[in-house]
Amino acid sequence: MITQSNSNFPNSQALLDIICDRIANSPQHRLTFAEYMDLVLYHPKYGYYSVKKAKIGKRGDFVTSPSLSSDFAELLGEQFLQMWEILGKPQEFSLLEMGAGEGDLACDLLNYLQSRHPDYFATLQYNIIEQSPSLILRQKEKLQNFIDNSSKICWRSWLEIEDNSQVGCFFSNELIDAFPVHSVTINEGKLQEVYITLKEGKLTEAIGELSTQKLKEYFRLIDIDILGQDYREGYRSEVNLAALEWIEQVNNKLKSGYLLTIDYGYSAQRYYNPQRYQGTIKCYYQHRHHDDPYANLGYQDITAHVDFTALERQGKNLGLEEVGLTQQGLFLMALGLGDRLSELSTGKFNLIEVLKRREVLHQLIDPAGLGRFNVLIQRKNLNEIQKLQGLETKPLHY
Ligand SMILES: C[S@@+](CC[C@H](N)C(=O)[O-])C[C@H]1O[C@@H](n2cnc3c(N)ncnc32)[C@H](O)[C@@H]1O
Image (tube, rainbow, N blue to C red; front, side, top):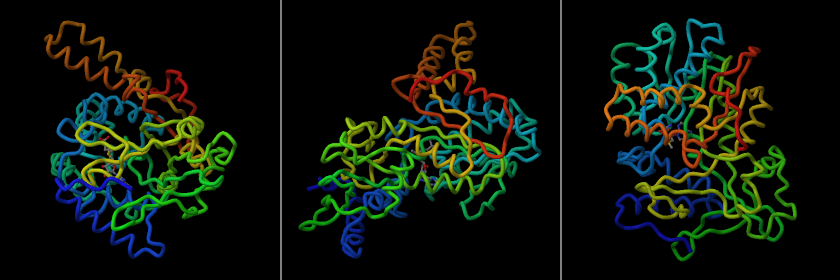
């Protein structure tokens, strides 16, 4: 039996009622884990990302690179500038940020490009594609300056973006790990799926046949023999079918340019390593993490690591050529983070400033933390052989 929601959280009961209702009204009286995760994170009224409350940053539940320091956005800005140059400095260049959270990255990036690279800034159209209406409101507040003083920035849904229309770069930080995932398991020698159902009025997990054959096809795409002898009975993991649909969507909209994805995860070989037999689900609440996705309903983030092989293969099949994959630490160092660290020893700053800045810069490249996130860059309709600056340092295994 699953741990039930905590009554200290007023929305949890309402969300639980909605989940129970959905289960009761579904044909087989059960939800896939992906349907469950979609409800608890994105239900328009009670979902974690819909409720008006700080989620990201010191006052929220977890920190992300953009929430730590503007250095992240600024160094990324240097990479976007080079992409623009490689594309031949087009008069209109789109940056499309998917899943913009609190809007920190957009704000720091636009401020930096405006002051440091005005020629590039003049050509820029910044688009945000964001699922959460309450986060859109927060982003608009933070970016008011750019809404009032220029038409630099707009919020768009996928439907509002014409196919094959965008020249520039689609990018995201910690988006894919927030997509709802299916939960699969080996049961009686077969690949089966974990569902959420009701038993005596309480949420319970139940195992059943796969909800879609796409789950089997997924393992073929990434060349993993999930029914091979290495996988023992009870082995469990996640499959992010939404990530495959997302990359298809990006590919449809991109005319020429790049897709840059930053997130935590592994290659398929490591993701589906038989020893990682309990999957990769992690939940975040007030800067603590645990692996119970049924606790703190609507008040905690639920994530799953990203299978980068799936992004690479799906991209390749669609016509997105891989430019390179590296780790965030190496990527940011190649873009100049080392110079920023050295600058701290020049005597220009006071000691407190130096200590604070050194700490955040180190956090961004920490090989045991944010620095080991993967950075995947794919491109479309470009033959340019010039190496991207962020990929200049050879990556370690991922
Ligand atoms: C973990 S937060 C990361 C936020 C931000 N990128 C950062 O690094 O601070 C995930 C973000 O993705 C958004 N999101 C999740 N699914 C989405 C989707 N399908 N389309 C657009 N945004 C989505 C969430 O609402 C949230 O803004």
